[in-house]
Amino acid sequence: MRDTDLFQLALGLSSPWFVARSDFSAEDKRLDIHLDFQRGARFVCAGCGRDDCAVHDTRDDRWRHLDFFQHQAVLHARVPRVTCPECGVRTVNVPWARPGSGFTLLFEALILAMVKDMPVLAVARLIGETDNKIWRILHHYVEEAVAAMDLSEVRQIAADETSAKRGHDYVSLFVDLARRRVIHVAEGKSAETVDEFAQELEKHGGDAERITDASIDMGAAFVAGVRRNFPHAALTFDKFHVIKLVNDAVDEVRRSESRKTALLKGTRYIWLKNTENLSEHQQARLAALEGANLDTAQAHQMRMNLQDIFKAPSVASAKRRLETWAAWVRISELEPMIRAATTLTEKADDILRGIATKLSNGVMEAINGNVQAAKRKAKGYRSKRNLKAMIYLIAGDLPGLSPT
Image (cartoon, rainbow, N blue to C red):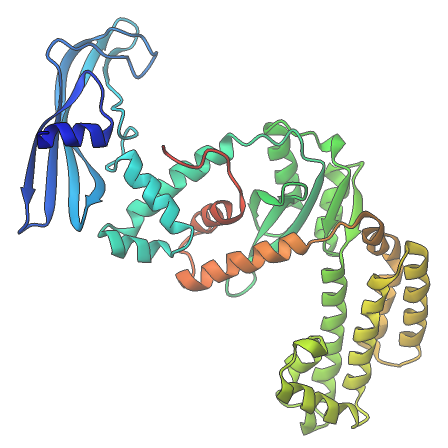
């Protein structure tokens, strides 16, 4: 078998395209494969799809292909421009690459697979291309897949923010709880991000009137946005956000008390974790601190007892536990904890609903963890557009996200 026949089979070319010749340079570590089309061939118009259009002229083009062993492979071809009665002179779409790309479809598929597990800059260095070229490929396929999303079956949603970079800079993630996937990413964390999501939901076949549940944090912005856009959605404030609220109160008690005693120096994370998640050294230090009659230790015990609410066998039982817990907190004279207890009491129905519905933002926390891990590996992203594309790629479960 000739080399041209072998490459033709490997590339999957069909008439009128064929491999005309190949040039290999071991010194340059490069394989050049030259493609051509049969004389007299006619093509489909890329504009209107009209068949049997005659060739007007050609232009030379090339595309980076999958490496041939350790050697870079490049395809070359005369790309015809055809005369179409409807569209005039139009360039033909070649079957091995998308229009305007300097890479073959198979090479782009490789890039998409790699960037799911590697920082874009690392992929760029590995394949010997600039990261800007990789981002252009990623944006094309992600944005195309997002535009094609079908959200007609979405009924239960979750929303939360995640940091875009250091400081108060966030993006808000909206998740389909049934399919456990990100369906929209908005810049910021205001009520307007919920407005934006509602509009996108409708654009993709969804119906705001048919959203039955929304699992969100207790921030006023998300609450206002959900109530404004999803009138039939029952709110659920999940366990994670409840514990976070109380953790913040515990930390406020610790910061205040640490001004009076050196015992609390370097202990912040000891009070914010469950005991079983502490190291042996941390557990020993916590045991010693608990015997020191500290306000922080009392606040920590309140925080630990609060978790029993979510182990209750029924909503009624959980409500009684919450009322008992709040009464205990109110006589403690620890103002941060009292404020937290007041908030939880006021929002009790929406907090306890999760016990009955089993809805939570657990999937959101997993997604946030994966996003932040990717961001750390990449040492941040230059733009929010890049961050949003990576979130969709990691957690969007986008159908058809492949050029092949």
